[in-house]
Length: 329
Image 1 (cartoon, one colour):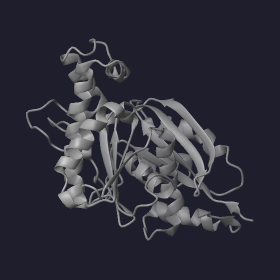
Image 2 (image 1 turned 30 degrees about the vertical axis):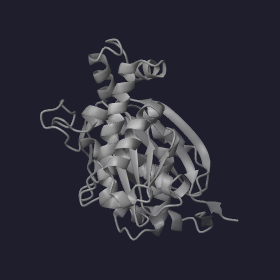
Image 3 (image 1 turned 45 degrees about the vertical axis):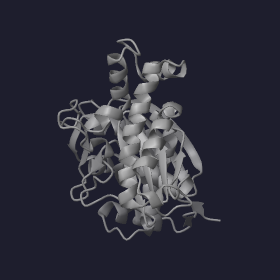
């Protein structure tokens, strides 16, 4: 029996990272998390210092590389990362981190890594065509079509949170106004609830959920309206893309009991009628480990893709250097 190839996958978020070391079959060989200062003068060095002990801890089995999921997009032409939620602009994360760790590194949008998890191991396994929509600090989406993850011509497919809703709306961290995130992210919901007097001036997302759980009509209405807005947008996506299913995830699903009625009502009302009963909706409870496992899958699947990108070639070379290794499937 050969030694199973494995990879490290990491979900990078504001203030924290969550990581796994895993086989392609989804077996967790290691799980870890740590505080992370994304505003550090040298975030490359900060990430490298956090990951280096986990890279060094690997035994003689083939570690193929590191996959990172970030809340932004990776320009497919340059490899540069744009992650406004982290304050990152034009970050050459893949190449610099690869040099620091002396390993191949692949970087993708974090919702794309979640969709990769769902397709390989989760609720998306029965489907070749599905949408993943994530709620929380931001609003994101990923499209799996014909069994393949669609990244678009520039790597920015799925930036649902920056769908324009109202050019006169609230300011968004991307520099524009009235993006979907300014109405449906956790911070936007709290802002609306404060304005409505449903929560106090120092309240956060947990306080808003608690108010809605206790039956406060103002708090419940904030969630219902946000769910309806999201459902209308999802209906438009479903009508254009014709998915078999819509998967909803992210920390925002902690309030799904309050979002669900508005979301599902607007989704069914807005969807192309023949699709109303044909598109399944599933909610996957929030777990950052799933996002990290999807990031690891970016690396573990790389030897079997047609991608000729240099870091993919380096992953293939590392696998070839371990003649007794296996990639489990």
